[in-house]
Structure formats: C-alpha cells, structure tokens
Image 1 (spheres, rainbow, N blue to C red):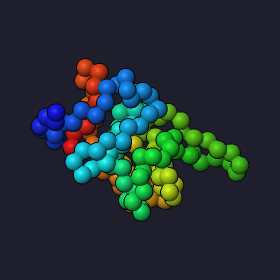
Image 2: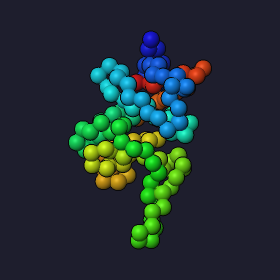
Image 3: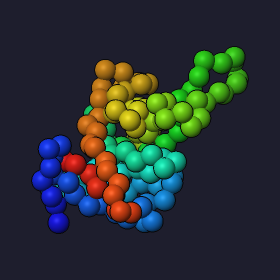
Length: 127
C-alpha cells in the first residue's frame, strides 16, 4: 500500500534481501517505469527511460566513470558514489545514479530520480 508523505507518495518496491548489492529491479508505479538500484549498499531510483531515444535505461550496465588516462589505458573511478553511472543499453549515454545528470554523450540531458528510503528491511520509493 502506498503512503503519502512530504516528499511524495511512498511505495514499497522490494525487501533489502530481494535487492542485493549489484542488482536492479524495474517496478511500475502508476504510469512510470522506475529502476531501483542497490549499488554497493547505496540505493537509487531512476526513471527507466533514456531521454535520448526512449531506451529502457535501467537495463544498462552500472560502473564507475572513466578517468583521464594515457592512450590504451582504462582507469575507472571505481566505487566512488558520486561517480557511479548507468550506461544506456542502446547508445551508451551515461547518467549518474545519484542525481540523473548526463555525463557522457548525454551532457545536458537528465533522467528523473526518485528518493529511496530503507526502513525495517524494506525499500520504498517516493513518487
């Protein structure tokens, strides 16, 4: 059952046990498809639509950002929370999990994010 709060309506989406680190669950809340991520114990929720061409964004891979490096060397930012991104499965546009801002290809584009709350082992999304 959804519960109204100051930050929107709170919707239960999964138990923490059912959403282990490294996983994503796609949920439908009203007309919205939302991806709920457990990225190393940090929970994020993003609209499951890439603003570039409407791809199912949350079906893409999650990783760190590429740091500037020498030719033929690949240095990722790793587990730094502020640099974790989801990469669109269609065209590779990248959006930060924490705020939905486009960081590569999609600069200037943004994906809607939603507040996530964990309480008593349950994960809730505020819409």
